[in-house]
Image (cartoon, rainbow, N blue to C red):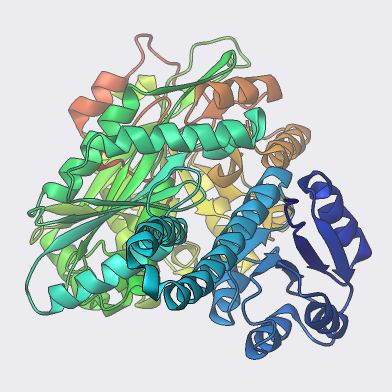
Length: 635
């Protein structure tokens, strides 16, 4: 018996896209039909009865969503599976809402297209076979009632076949075809049922969102087959750490979810640490290459204030983003009762919190060293360069709160000037307590808000503080973040010139992240350029970011400005920066931030006595800086 040839209808208003999909499916032994409009697609679907529709979303006239609605509304075409082809992730949920079965991301990946098409065709074939078997069973029961002995034997066989197909359909509907784990739909159903029990106080549970770091590197350098194998091996590694009662699912891409019930207050973070520890020993091998793998983990306790799966995923995604921003292999625990709960920033009375913190002296100064990538121009050894960082101590929870949480409210409630003055005084006081180390400290950077430099008297405050504690101005560098608006360039220039006369330096922080970089460099007397870490962190894998770092470095060289690169996390990135001629590097690869104390500074001092006239410039973000601490530093 000759197998029936499957028919696929490709719908796209761009002929080139139809050609690409047709070429991709050329070897699948399918009959292909094509339509360039929604109206034509409906006509072909009704007349040709395809087995699958690959449907573009954005089309003139009738878009893909409307085409899908009409297909599903017509009984003749309602059972035809529709796979949306879209470049926008926002279209995915709407596509499922109108009856879509799956989606393919643009630009398309040929292997992904073929895999998803085979999956949908297999599913449709099984459904058709199931319908045929059901019809056959009904006929045979009616025909063979008189022959019960023989009929029962055949019936049992056919029931077993039907049961197998039903089980197979259920498996395909609830499992990921790459890792064989539960899929997002199955996780949604499980969490929804769990949330109902949590509301009735019948259980407590925790959710872990695990995001593989550098999965894209493997997928793009070795191909999607290697990427799929990595996902399977990664799933096996994590599954080996779980209990039989834990629910483990792949959410899509390089994200996985784990639901653990009755884990206790520390069960979620403990499991996350076990996952990261296990990954530290895991190495992925493909052909002659090997890759060390890590992951970022978000831990969310499923409490009564979470009422839907979508809400849980929003919270977990935000926590995972913050974990990735803090560096590779980190854990972010979300707790809505903590000040550091990013999703509850607006529910905190920040005005009262900040006023009380200033009154009770609950702010803390931390620092991070900068590392020279080249010898000094005069040939002398470099002295110590550091960046100072501000933190807020939450005494109720015994936790440190990062500046990303409280700097924006401090500016909104006009308290940022007091925070900047606290930081200036705290840093200068500490430097004044160790005059014997001044000859080995070249630069101590403090971040200033652009809001603060508009306040009258700040320059005078800096001068008086330096004089009070006997700290030379040449040790100080003040960073102004490029993404913050400097409203009055004239007053900013006067502020900078006043402190320049004391020997202080200025650095333009987060260079390249906004639109005012070149205006500021031309009109304000900055001494140093600090390249935004968002371009530096992945410049070894992102060609666009690598090109931007190269361009900014060349421009700084033309302006004769030293360059600092932040968020340097690997030796590979450090090597690229050396080749580009970047002067200084800062990041976890060289130094994890730590509390600013005299002992810590002395332990960081170079062995040689630095000349007091050393003029190399470095800097550091404080209020609002993105230099995040890993969980170990928060403990």
